[in-house]
Length: 499
Image 1 (cartoon, helix red, strand yellow):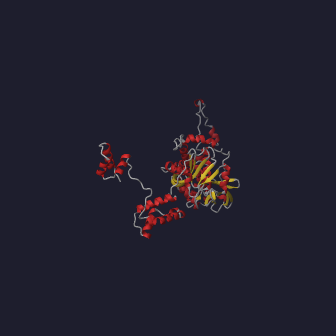
Image 2 (cartoon, rainbow, N blue to C red):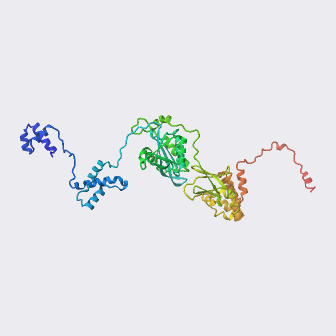
């Protein structure tokens, strides 16, 4: 192939120095036709072949095509790679060529068979207020000083890109419903179409094509808010790529560093502030910001119902000998006077309420997992007071004792010192019972005063607590006392019998 310096020499010899074609041909060794072609046009460089042959690989081409065709029926993670094909050719058929040749051949064969493994996407312009996408992510947070694994619900508008994120302890159906309810309130309306993965909390059975058999409770929820669900093809989560991007965005921007909060509710309040502040930028290909598009979109959403969906589950159960009731594989305490009674249970997404008839007898934060116990000490104090020997080993007391203030520990020691073990513990429980009806800060202030006075009885603590807000009695000074007549002390003799 002619090089650039030869191309330049030929053109310069003829155009600048006026040499004849015959003379240039004699000097360079090129034919006259070649020199004429160079003088007529630009330097073309190498010309690619229409088809690149594989002389060493030629006997194996049909075999490689067959292996790749059979891969269409094989699981995605168990298909031939170019390296595997090269190794098979070498081990099974004695192939002597280079691996790079096999790679190039396999790449071209895959292109011909449509097996590139990469999908092509269609640019879209969604309509305002029609579709939103829903997905879950997972993260860690420090709640009340403990690291906790959480799941976070995400909903993203396809038109505006505005999104909503909220954390939950799990991905159960009540959490899914509550996420929707909170998101609809955030967006100030309901999107007519929501796009999902094939969530087991929504889909009972995947049918042919896009058809799905829905969970009955999810179908009721959907009907209440009047939206239509669309579900991705199995294993094709990228069909709702917008919200999958938000799952990653929320993890990188809202969960780094690991968020800390006193409670889950406080954490969600912080997330809400971040979601509200998101949207002052423009998405690629859009002329308006996310917030400007969202303002246009709000008027197209379905109006919220006047009353939100009652996202409750109910159950019944019998209170056992430990004065606990089994709810969703976890146990919750009730006052001991209700032991062995039947009770009704109302499960909220974040709490459990227990009723005896129409009376609410207990309320607990909801537990997630299996075989966990939520025991409130106030439910057992009267019983422990009757059995003071169980005080130190009682689980509700031991759990409470890990966190109660040091002043209570010092008060217990003082009561036992002044009254003995049994009477001292019983009297100390009378102080603990005060937590049912009084503020903890006020009780602990009264306990500190009792300790300062070295008073080892509950009656003194109660007196200090009850009179904490009463002002000390005061007396006005006696006026004109100098003008009063002197007292007659003789009357005291009459009182004392004439002594």
